[in-house]
Length: 420
Image (cartoon, rainbow, N blue to C red; front, side):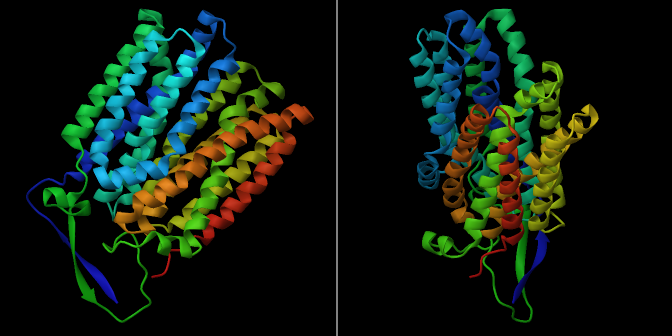
């Protein structure tokens, strides 16, 4: 078979790192504004208009559905227009929707605006940014994806306190104008200045490394993301690999949708005060960042199936701890393990897709998986709430969650590269 002899290019700096910075900027600022700011807005809006928090929270749910479900359309547009154009157009439109929150007077105004922001953020968000990073990196793809994922987690740490201070200083309506301006600046800096669709557009190659083939003894060939040939979608759907990836992504989404929604309430139910319960969420966010970076770094040397399986194993252990202890120290251990798991597994999906499929098909495969990911998160949050309403506790729901986590572990371990 053919293997590669690495030839490092000299002279011009590799532009891929600038592209990664641009993708990180979009992920951090737009994701932080769209998702992480909502928790700060919620009590302020509820107090001013007298709407219930459940009523206001529906806006984010609608926005998330609008963000994820049309993903196949985003994939099509990314392929036709290029991810760079999608980033610029999508985020400029998102800034317009964010600025319009200044004018909100009725609850349906928020619903309509969050649906609009969700749609255009989906166009210029995760699929576009991860696609462009996938285009620029092959050898260091897992590391680049880990860094990109970590930038999303940074929004959860930075935005809530910053926006809280901003609201206190100038008011909630004016704060959204500031946030809209930040999105415009990030779209211009990232989309216009930093991001380019492919290294070939600048006369470069992925990772800044050229390869020349070396003939070795013949072995059965696998087509992976390193090869230029584009597969037909019917080819991609035939084997078990894509379905195994989809299954472990859904399993992880069920867990994270549950924990992000119900973890604080469960901890208060078993006797912890609200501040301690909130602290576990912050701790989980910090270690989610570390989990993303750890997966991306270790995947340069260790098989990604083993790393994803280890992530699910951490998830299983953390749920067992949560179910069996009332000790604060062990609860913090739970938060650490769950955070590492969530960061690692969120990075795993684009790494699997990028490593296993041609660059030309990354967008289509990702856009096929993402609606199931978002839907699973939404369904989990609602279903676990329903189980709690019926039984008066979370125990049954968490046991069911553990079973799905084990299924995810098996699927991740079984997801081998598809054969040609």
